[in-house]
Amino acid sequence: MGSSPDELANMAFQFAKGGIDIIKDDHGLTNQKSAPFETRVKKCAQAIREGEQHSGKKTLYFPNITTSAIRITERYQKAVEFGADGVLVAPQLVGFETMHELAKLGELPIMAHPTFSGSYLINESGVDPSFYFGRLTRSFGADAIIYPNAQGRFSFSTDTCKAINRSCQEDLGSIQPAFPAPGGGVKLNTIPGLVEQYGRDIIFLIGGSLYKHPDGLQVAANEFQKALIKQHEE
Image: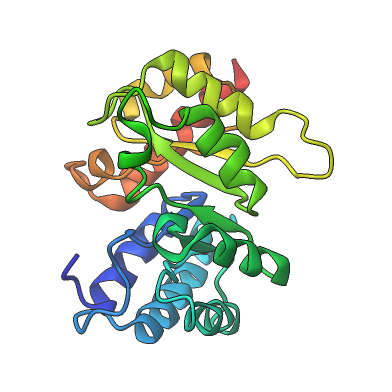
């Protein structure tokens, strides 16, 4: 937050150069003066395509298009135009039906962010998290669903996280499965345990520990990929 489009593009370039699989905008990035939507998305998409030339692999870019319901389709279409590979949406802010309308456009996969979902889930009278993040969010068209990981700053148990994962991928007839994306507390040294707990059909949302790496973002991304590959080979 507060970084310029050039600064964000350089981060994206370093991550892509290190072979990261997916780069998403921070959920707080919208259309701030420090990083206007169109400039940010153009520069980040271009930087990622350049980074791919060094890594030799595809990196997907998901810009955050969250805005008012009347403008979000325009942002979706701009993301397509600028070469994004998917979009990040906060359904609690734009509405589940709005996300569903975007999903029906069918051009880009949608990653759903859980911001503002806490009040629905954190007390005993709230919605069951496995239903909310699995069946409900998935039914409205999300292809990947971010949720608070048990080892992060939030209060979900490991059993609850496993139930969310199952709910994202269980058979619901014509409704397609979604990738669970646990975030919070995912670090390089926790990857082996998380893969063992959650399996392989997972998108691990990792951020802080990569930014803190003493050797920079490219090395951090490369080490993250190596950790995942090692677990897949074992």
